[in-house]
Amino acid sequence: MNPSIERESFSERLQQALRNAEYSPDSPTQLAREFNIRFEGRPITVHAARKWLVGEAIPTQEKLRTLAQWLGVPAEWLRFGGADGYANGSDGISAHARFESADVKLVADLQRLDAHHQAIAREFIRMLLRINRQK
Image (cartoon, rainbow, N blue to C red; front, side, top):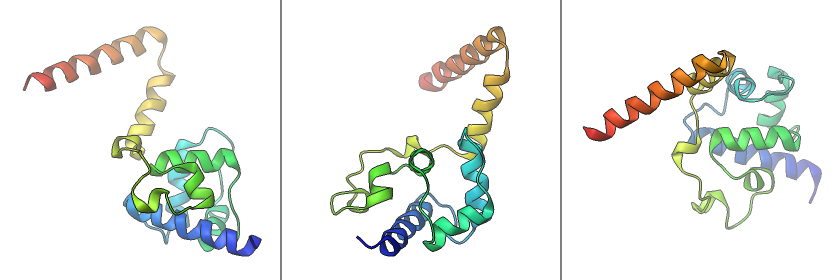
């Protein structure tokens, strides 16, 4: 496949995944911010996000996996597309696979706690879940 067409096709799938996850496909600033919250490596620039959105570049495999996990789509579909992929609803990924920014920040905050306080936070969440199930 022509590299230019490959990049444009990736861009279309990325924009579709962003729309489906209720994010703007027109905001490289939002894409960069949301991506960087979730990516443990070196942050991307707004310019890099813009290149992904307009079909000038395709992210590395590591970045692609982060995008796919965040947006709740298979990384293979996001990179290569395919007739039996996400577009036809056979992705097998639940809506629970996507995390909001606040959730990601909360997990990062939890990881900054010492082991004792992490255990307390986890037990508190389990207690809330038990109470919620009893309702």
